[in-house]
Length: 257
Length: 257
DNA sequence: TATTATAAGTGTTTATTATACACTTATTGA
DNA sequence: TCAATAAGTGTATAATAAACACTTATAATA
Image (cartoon, rainbow over all chains, first blue to last red; front, top):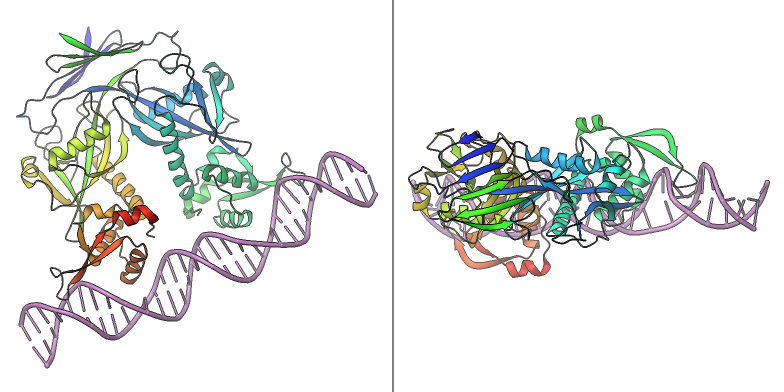
């Protein structure tokens, strides 16, 4: 028993009742009016570069690979795109499976498609990065998945091309963070300016002048200064701020260096 | 008769002698030591946003769709990724099929993976842009493919999400052209400064001050001024220049606005 | 309770980069 | 020889980025 999902000149997609799927491919008849030669069907995965920020360090959540090939190495959290699942939805689902988190800021990084990139077989993988607040994820799930946080600048050996994925992700994050207010996704709702500066220093991996930074960030008028202070990190205590999304939508220019 | 390409816990890929392919998918046994649930296999395509520059205009090469669905609309040149073909190679091949050109500057733009993006069936498509010299492509091939050039700022109705692909591509091109010397890929080996300026104006879609542009571009020391003049576009004639790739590799900073 | 140590908070000056702006030159065709 | 066209050239001003050091609040300690 099977169900035909679609059929056209080039391909037929069917699903059997047992959720097994077949894709039947054929060479195109050259009289057909386009340039396709044949259709192959390839497993497509998404891999998540999950960024967190803790102790003034940018961190990545990686899972320990407990099986061959490349047993013992570390890996990005990944999963296959389902037949009836949007690509972006797959990325969110995979993130959710590891962290329990929904509605997280994610960006597509790049698609990796070398035939031999996964020695287990041909898989095309779309890399996404995610910015999460470390306080909010589900610790039990993460433990259950044998996942751990690593400092971005002190990563363990990773499988396949996952290091390349991470490098592309951080590059893209660096670009983005300069022109859009996305860094806040890594901080708690209330944060201090020293924290925010440390975050930018961690992402850009370079020191920033305190006075210049504060001048610049405050000139954007997107921060609401609260009357509370955070005294956890200094005797004096630092004022807490909140990111005003609404204020940003209106004036909506953002440019840090 | 069929050949088993690879087999593991999750999937088996086989090819028959007639070049028909089957991918057999199954739900993962939950005792297996990772987070995957099941593997689906999805047709993956590449679509090429082919940029050319002519008459001070940025242009796109599109093909006329002569069959349903969306017959009569225009489309990016696309094709399916083959089983044993790297993703980047697929993009080059597809470009080559339409233009006859090899060894062309291409960049991956984004991967589009909404389930319903192609009404003919689920296809994940990876968009690439290409920068070609209009003088060099194979006109006969292009004609044979029912392809035509369109001004980027006067595009016809396009199928599916191809307009979105184009928009993302031009956005990415704009970014890239400001920090890397890739614009030269759209110009003949010898070009004039007015031509180069017009190219940047076309890409960025904004006028540029002549003196400021020349000051900046010449300060980069990546152009070799030739003794020849191009008299096709003015009575006075404009000096021809050549891009010195070597000079760029050495000093290797490039920043236009 | 006075002292010390720590991180928060604050302005101004200088350097660099971007922007604005108009006339002269070479050449062809009328 | 005159007119039309596009190429070629430099300077002044504005905006932005970078450099830089002391004061303040507080908790812990002597």
